[in-house]
Structure formats: C-alpha cells, structure tokens
Length: 494
Image 1 (tube, rainbow, N blue to C red):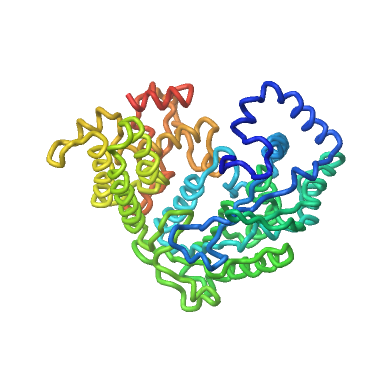
Image 2: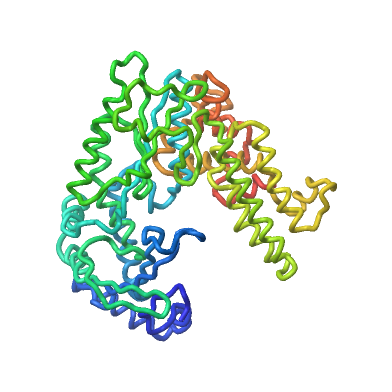
C-alpha cells in the first residue's frame, strides 16, 4: 500500500492504472449509473484521516499543529473529477464565479492575485495616497461548511436542479471518517458538515459557498481579492476625509455578521494590517478602532512578505536564506545522485523559490537582485563543480539558465502575452490596453501596448500596467505577433 492512496482502497492507485484496460468499462458503467440515478455509494463517502505535522519541529502534543490529511477511495475521485469538470464548465459559461477569487480556478494563481493587488497599491501610492491593506484568514473554513446552505447555493446561485441536485445531496449526506495514526485506527464517526478535504470537488464547492461574500464587500466600494479562504481588503486613505476608515470598518462588520450566519469565523491571530505610503511607510490614521492591534510593518501575504516601503527586501532575505539552506543540504547528497537528477532537484528546491511570484520583484534595487543572483550562481557551481573564482556567466549559458534579472522580465512579458491572448484572469486582462494611434500609422499593426503615465520611479514605474507595456513594446515584432504560447516562449529563449 503506497502512502498516496487511501488505506480503504482494495487496489493501490498505481496498480489500478496498470489494469485500467480491463476494469475501465466497469468503472465507467459505475460512474454513469451514479450520475443517472443521482446517488453516490456510501463506500465512496468514507474518509480516512491521517494527521501530519504542519512543519518539522512543531510540538506534537498540540493538536492545532497537525494538518488532517483526508484520504478518499481512488474510484470516488474519478467520479468527483467528472462532476467537477462539468460543474466548472457550466459555472464559467454562466459567469457564476467571483471575478476576484483566484483559488481553484484555471489560469489563476497566487502570483496573478498578488500582481493585481500589488499593481493597485503601487498606482494608488503613485497618486499620492496611502493604502490600508487588511489580510483576513478563516478558521477551519472547509470543516464548518453547512450542507443545507451549500445545497441552497447550488440551487439558487448556480442553478442546479433535478437529478444533478439530488446527486449533490447524496454526495454530502451520510459522510463519515476515521482516524489512522501509525498502527492505530479509530472507529468511524459521522461527518455532518464541511466539504471533504482531499477531495476533487471540495475546493470548488467551497468557492460556491463563499459566493455572497464578494457582493457584501463590493457594497461598501472597497477593493478586495480572495484566494480560497484568504481574503485581502484594501482601501486608499484620503487625507482630507474625516473618517477614511469608515468603509473598511463597516465592510468588516458586515463580513463578520455574514460569516456568523454561515458558520464561519475569522482567525483573529492571523489578521494583519499594513499601511503603505506615497514614498515610504504610511502614517496610520489617529484611530484604527479594532484594527489597531493588528498593524504590522511586515506581513506575509500568500507566501510573500510585504513591507511598508514596498522594497521587497524582507522577501528577498527569506528566499536567499531558505535557498542556501537547501543548497547546503543538497551538497551532502550530490555524490550519490546523477547530474541529471541533481539538476531536477535543484530546480525543485531552489529555482522554484527564485521564481515564485518573481513578477513582484520588478524595479527592486540592484543589491536585492544581486543577492538572488548569488543563489542561482551557487546552484550552478554546485551542479557543475565550478570553482568560486571562475566566471559563472558561461556556465549559466551552457546550462540554458536565464539570470534572475531576465527571469523576472520573462515572467512579465509572458503574463502580457497571456493577457493579450485570453490566457490570463479577467482582472488582469482589463489592465493592459493596445496602443491605438490617432492616425493610420505603421505602428497600428505592430501589436504595441499603451504605456500609461506615472509619477514616481519606485512606485508607479513598478506597476504591472506600466512596466509590462514598456517591456512588451521592446520585443521584436515577430515575437509580439507569435501565434501560440509555445512559439512565444521558444522565440524569447532564443
């Protein structure tokens, strides 16, 4: 029995795939029968929960330090995958999903979410205003979803009726779980609420459960962005306003009331507030009310550290520190693995850290870029055995590794290409505009972007809406007009 499978599986997933040619028609008949009758077999709704420490070194005596990993039968995930595909296609065609919810959606990611929020903050600061950003997190949100409310959402917000609705009622009812820890197994217990963690449908159903939340925030004309159960609310602070925090405080009050009615709750310990100024740390208003104790100079937003000056130096410090730790660990196993495998491991543990949300690094100071480049240089030296005093540029070229500076530019122009070709979230597509000259000129058919004006080099010039058009317009015409994403990537690499 492999670890990734459920202990209740008769066949391990890898063996299941090997004999798919034989059992495939029977599984297909089972799935079609479930969808036609609107019924989910009880055995598909029995989960085995295996607790796992969130991070090594945490106190194992505290239950809050464990993450419950819910494992469901392999065949049930095949059924859920089919339902999820149909539900997602229908919801997208009817524009049901919240635009500013980036979790569990195709073409969306934490980077696209942060890029939109970061862009809005930079442009607001460039206009001379301070920005208040509030980071909210829900406590055990997936576990407290009420099934009756979720069925109501599916019926009245999504428009599911008849047999399809009966299938979801069957899917959510009579669920149970047991806990497995080492050699010990608990008895089965009913699961009357929550969406199954570890399931295929769970994240999508949770997004549907939170649909009214966006309308509540929009009512107060406050900007927001969600990623699963993490919510960011931000508001420009007008200095001539007698009560600049009124919209955000009223929205928080309504959010709390809505969460209470829907059996959800804020994680007060993870609520963080940060204020960005025009050219440095923002000056907080005289009275922040209940948010006063939550104000910090550095916050962690979807894995990225934001500082009040938007220099990203704390984020760079974290990336460099963790990357060098991984390099020291990998140097110990280098003698035992091949060069090819070592390169794969380096990309998995180091390059991914350098590339994560690196679109936010555009415009940071040269000292921070140099520190990130040191990490890549050290990884290349470890892989090739290059000595410290030897030039690293030819080594990077031989490995076909783009230097950090160019990797950042590559990410920006790649996002610009996706925006122009319908491969990016709609909240990014509205930020870039094609250049339309007043007269009929040669530039009208060169796929150029309009570059908006900005005031500050370290604020407005770093916004995605400013830097992306500048980088895009510098590309040769044959690259800007590349018909496919693969061709665009290959042209840029050459």
